[in-house]
Length: 233
Image 1 (cartoon, rainbow, N blue to C red):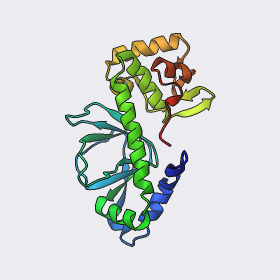
Image 2: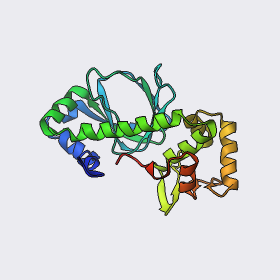
Image 3: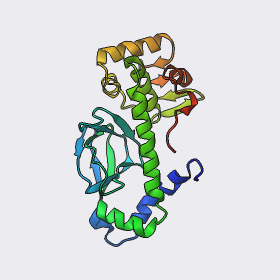
Image 4: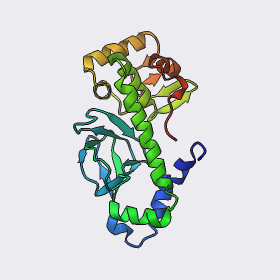
């Protein structure tokens, strides 16, 4: 059994890049790309993995199963990493929420390097644990009401923000009413009303960017997550 954060350390961005660069063919199979904010890319094959260096992506499932479910990928993480050749494909869309730099990595090259340099599968285990966390969030969201989905999506976005004080978090600058409504699967007008109620209660400050959640624990209680809500790291 691994200690908290141990796998994430083994699978850090710097360690992954160090592993990939051990082969002289690195530049042939791994290419760095600068992606403008708002760019959307459909992912429907298992030929490439995408490793995020800077910026934030949303990954939204668009296939018949799981359509509408999303998660946010933060710097240093794989956005797409097929674990098995026969893995059931999930068609999805990657959208750059900010200006992004990612590495596009040929899967055959990555597979070769992982077999050679990561025989204990630390990187794959870390991604599997990350995926397990995402699936937990998807299942949790499925059972929430409309208003709870707005609260829940705000909590998800705190992971990409900054904890400024105990129980307070700045939300990421890319968040706006339209995006939050999309994440919550509600209309923008409905989302706006829910946020207005949070402002009246002093839980949300959104008159200027960055938005601030002044009582994260209160939001957690609204969706019955309490202390169980934390990233996979």
